Image 1: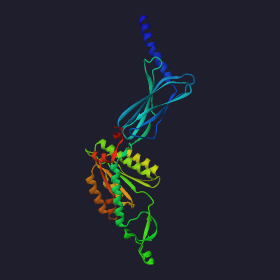
Image 2: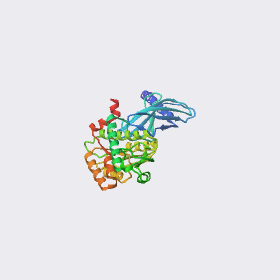
Image 3: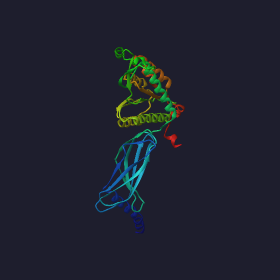
Image 4: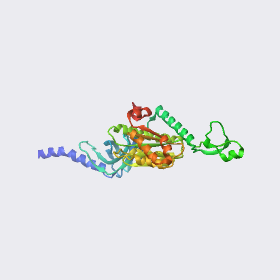
Length: 360
């Protein structure tokens, strides 16, 4: 039958191709290696390993498609293995760049092949999933920030001198000199020596900066400004860990969740702070009052300083003053040590250059 013969000749290649593809994908496994963390806007590598557990038959032209799901939707990456011999494994990789911070999921993986004729594709899906945390991009602090920080440090020193607060190590007793703080006079030694004597202190650590981030959701606080504010907070946290390898570091976030991190050790704090900033979210009821109350009720060191990045600077100032008045013990310490930085484009551009600005 001529029609049957023609049909067989046309269908034969499809049947052959399908049978070979099934053989190519039989006893084939896939493994994925993903870094635990990466930075927004930076490229990182994802390794794909294809194992062929067949004893005699090679797997050829096997295509592995990986899915990445997160804030920006679903992306797809493809890796093709030309040939993996019997009982062999081959590893390849693809480069990925994720522009926005957050939590992303890899998977599932689909493997397929069109070998040998390329006229039909067959494959199956493997439920292999991994998670990665994309940290906020670390930007660059501008001279405007250095000026503001220096002014705040000078204000803290003046407040300490006026209140007679010392947080440095006691060094010894010496004679009173013109300009010394009268509050530092050691009266017992003065009576014994017959002249004024003062306590001398020796500075033993650098000034600390506690970063506070308010993620109050408003129309003016656009997604672009949100990411810039979060990147600035991340940059300040990283900068703190570059000064010393030990000590106590702090970060406060008021958003969908209110978090107060207090971690000892620069490496541990950097990891914890960047993770918290990577997954934080804005909220219409961000509890800034709870965050400020926790700060005000805690112990404030003599050289402690605070910077609050907020889209509602005036409301934040009034709130901080009200909370400080209700906690008289730390009223002056909080109000004189708090720098409020508006999360607005013009204010942020004065002190910070983010990743996008550097790229331009």
